Length: 328
Ligand SMILES: NC(=O)c1ccc[n+]([C@@H]2O[C@H](COP(=O)([O-])OP(=O)(O)OC[C@H]3O[C@@H](n4cnc5c(N)ncnc54)[C@H](OP(=O)(O)O)[C@@H]3O)[C@@H](O)[C@H]2O)c1
Image (cartoon, rainbow, N blue to C red):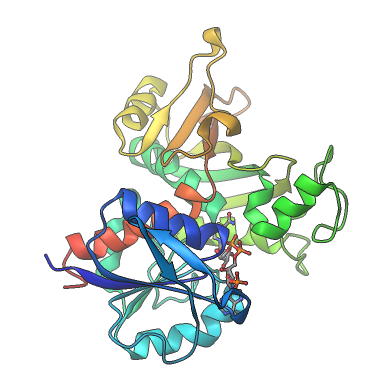
């Protein structure tokens, strides 16, 4: 295995900066790190492996010789600059929603559909943060009992909106959200569409079908912003194809990589955002039969949206590419 030249676009942002941390924690084989951001960051530095590395301004010529380009600077930056990175021969791992539903672009949660990296054509998309944290548990249920219908209800932290969301929460103002977020809950994430859903809700619906390879799955979603700094929670109601042994599903989840069961109601043990913040795994609890359905269950998942919901999953996609020989 060789060492790689790795660019991080948006290295000064919440996700980009965490990508740097995770690259270091996972000992990603790096020869040279290239942190990129906008002109606003000219003269700034990032810290990586004990060194201070100057941030460079992103241009279309930034990607010469780059092996991996992690994009975490929003959809418009990805739209404008990903083609230059691909043209330079870099493997792009994109955190925005720009390419996720492109049939030519794999959308990956490595523990669930890691083999899809083999279909890459230069770009791999990192799914939406709320989608990522639901995939492992749903995959376990799919394997045991088949999936028929999913109802998502999310409770998403303000860091999901980047620095702007955290500023509204921390400073008690509302420059980014349309209402104060402190002491409030907003049933509104991203723009409203003609069908009455928000874009975030449609992302959860469409991305789930793509990752679980099931276009016929029936899914609905309501996403809400809550006054929490880090970690998203998603309540998932699932109707299955057939009956199941709940213990078998629980065991499958317990054995699944990077999925942690915290499910002991008698001891008040269930995952919470404050406990999960800073961790890389997805946590699941409150697993119980849905007594209103013939075959169904409820569960509660929590993950750090900046880590597993973004940076950690992106770095794991990169490692999957190396493991499967997609990037040599
Ligand atoms: N927050 C989450 O939970 C989450 C989860 C999954 C995916 N994502 C996605 O990850 C991306 C970044 O989100 P974030 O939360 O990290 O946002 P953020 O904290 O606001 O950071 C944005 C980053 O993008 C850079 N940037 C903005 N415009 C640029 C331009 N024209 N050229 C070069 N760099 C530019 C910024 O650089 P400057 O500092 O120079 O402005 C900054 O480094 C978005 O696509 C978002 O949808 C976020």
